[in-house]
Length: 120
Length: 441
Image (cartoon, each protein chain N blue to C red):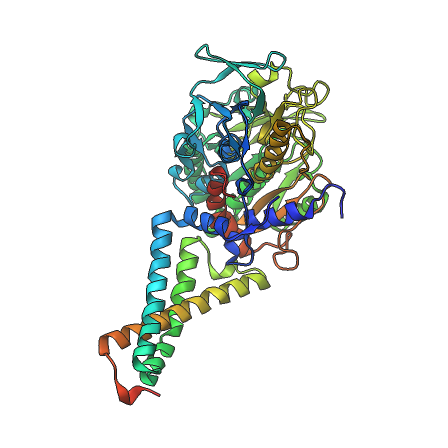
């Protein structure tokens, strides 16, 4: 009778954040992704200096994501109790690092504009 | 495989209920309303607008075309009861558990904002406090249970708080806030903390244990544990009904230096002298306390006990209704079903149980309307994120046969104290509960 459904998965996230905030976050994430694709297409490649700064910003995103999750869940690092906890924590950090680096890259590209000497 | 376990239902649904916080480790379960609508003019009465009543109303509205669905409950406020422990631990405000029933109900349901005063399953009639006479073809009993505070002599719910060192976090959001005030003040200075549970069936049998562990945690965080003592007075010879979980809880109690005494049933409490009196195998014994979280005996509402729906030979002092443990259909009245705490089944008065009662009752009710047999079977699944401190819990899930039935075997160990299990309790469960209310999970 019951089957896996993306619809219900979305319904739970709507309940978790409220429909407006949830879809606003989805929209922001989609917007940044589109902007990222836009600058890649516009520049016909990646700007290595911008990419370097984006990479350097990754630890900030990782730490911020972990700190945010710890804060909203009344948790501490000492609560990490088993392998699955480390995997989830690592996943949060990776998501934070990846998301923030893309944001930093996109922000540089949009603010500075196209720079041929930086591209490969 | 056990004869009770329907793998497709159980595994999929557990992941749906518990898997959301696991960061995409699992998917959610599809609601029943994906199925075709059934045309009917059946009159369906639902007693009680708690988790079971609201959720089944939402599911039936989607599933049945033309049915006249009437929900009977005079209470307008809805309580997310799994949140009461978090409120009583100072982790959420009182409003966290509150919402309005009206906001969850679908169009097409007639909500009679009165309480039932009489249920006559022979005549198929429900009478209400406002004098209404409601005839039904099918009845769903989802009244929940009542907390029998009067059974604890000397206890006064209005006096819960720091002045008396007494808590009562089962009583609702306001009482949970006062319980936190009492526990917070107690853990600031330390002393003797006392915990117990009633000898009756009760909702979320893990909650008394969780609250004991949370108090222990606060004492340690505040540096007052060394001069303090914690006593857990169990009503029987065990701490938890599932043997393997009981063993684990015993070990944690020992590790946390909680003194456990068995066969202690709370009889009375002197809130001025801070003294609890327990009935034991040898008579009675008094235990003085500085903080005591009181949990009273729990029973079916009187209107249900007077209706003839209760078991006649079991739980005679409690009045749970006589339903088949797998179909949740009443044993003597086949047009009556039960959802949630009111059911006289061997295990599980929890929101997770409600989640698993819903598709089974929907299936058998709709099948009966269509003149066929339902196929789904409830295997007794229930779950309890057993908090062992702020930030850690054990995600224990089990069935009628005391099997552990983990949603994520090999990934989230049921008897390990894990952060991810805490995340599920703190972040994901309310969202999933709300989705369940809307009939979407």
